Image (tube, rainbow, N blue to C red):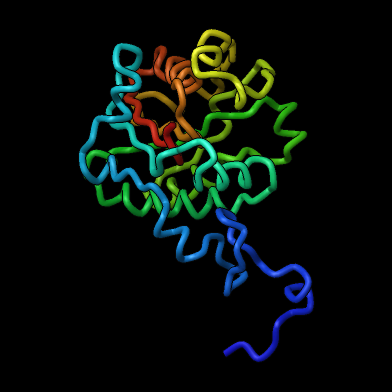
Length: 227
């Protein structure tokens, strides 16, 4: 039983990162109401090919899923905004643990050998201080009991944020460039590529093509959300 409230909480009480309402416990990120309102997909639990179809004709995938559905001005947008721009990495950890615990019960994900995040360019990483996908990927890797490798896929081009561009413009103007290092670690592996959100899928497509060029491997993808 808590006998006192820290002074800092009296002036800056913990708030839900989805609705900004007060939280009863500081170590929570999302209130009970928001958790119940989260638009969960259950794609990986239902055997749905919904995410695979986004990449139809573009990628050969073993599995593809996203934990949540993204709607403009919705609860998931608020969460991802707090994750990316307000230093709330604990959101990535929460979602990664959630999805990872589900994936480890799905037979088709039990053959995953390695989790690889979509990287940030070093300039953006330095400015933001963290890759918003890192905690998400680390928790999934922990749940699946496989390595997390952020030193294989490297982004070599710095691009401006595309969050406010229309879907078609984002696809047409995608000129992101990625390269591979330590490629011997990819040989004969089933790789899980992870990102925060799938919109057109253009970034994941470019990353996937690099990962599967010459290494006789298999690829699956997972994201926090899909638009």
